[in-house]
Length: 479
Image (cartoon, rainbow, N blue to C red; front, side):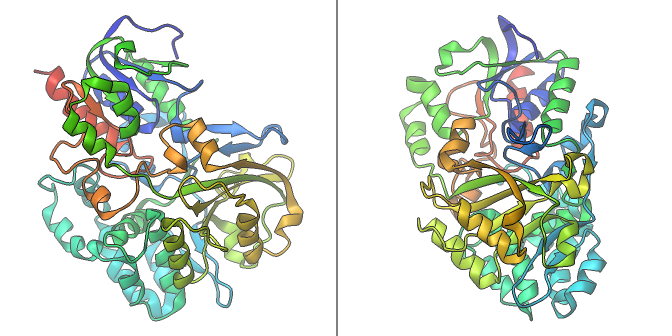
């Protein structure tokens, strides 16, 4: 990263998260000069990693840890990031969903192994995930972009489009046993919304199919390896990233032909000020933010004593009990109520990356879905959910690092009120992200583009929001 700012450039990108860096790379690969400005002391946004203050050398991922959409991204897969140190590492088991009164439900990377484990639930699992897993590349190329466009693979999209529109609770009701319904529901709950809402099956379909086709891997050495590889490649292409630059007004930007913002719509409206037309400003004011994440990074001596043996080999665990329980918890957080037992997502990086262990102490990544801007202390509830499926867990905790919704926003302003999705996952905002248009990235201000997770296709470390925004900006740069 260069210490000085370039006086002028072809393109300036505000925000060095995965989408901002993807936008910069897409433009730099076309031969344009790109400057990326980042307010934080280091790039990365949601892919930053930090050292535990109490356990030197123990690394925690600040926001994202598991990257199914990163390894499968149509854009990131085309980049030579492995040359710059990015290596994907896979746990033996991608996902385990423990249950109180039954064996844990398991999603293996191998579809046939999952079907064999699910028994009576296998037929529906195959109907939901089989075809999209076998056609995942065509599906991601069709879905990971502007929603209002002609699909590149219409037959594949048509085959999977109707089931994707269904609410998750409708699909879950078709599973013969609670195991299949719970496993499906935990994946659908990544929507962070009501599971009786349309399109929640679409989220499950993409994540589950990607898990079978590509796995749910970690970046070896922490999520920081993703941004480090992207920045190194960008610099080799002649681009630059300047940190510690907090852009508050559009006039502060260096001269450039186009400007792309890896920010929330709210932040962009503030930066543009009176340059934004009134109608566009009103649309921005209608953009709403959803439930939050409450995150606890734990240092655990000897690992978590899971009651289910397969859980020890899982990279990711969904702690929410039955489908009915987790659906109720998700409905509560949308309604602004903190559940007694919130849905908790857990990742065990050391299972795939043994180098993350330090002197017998392992990092444990955990967060709960909570109401927007939640002020409650949710740490006891998160640890109780883990203890529920791993008796004796609490006695193994060496250190804990708590990140409230306010802390998450302070570290990354894109996480408005702790919303890690870039906006509430309502039907309107899932479809019109942030507006229903063949080019949702172009703003009402000429030459200005939005490229954050608040744009299509959806949040996640895949860079596709940035890539498509850059494709839109290229129309100006190549004119």
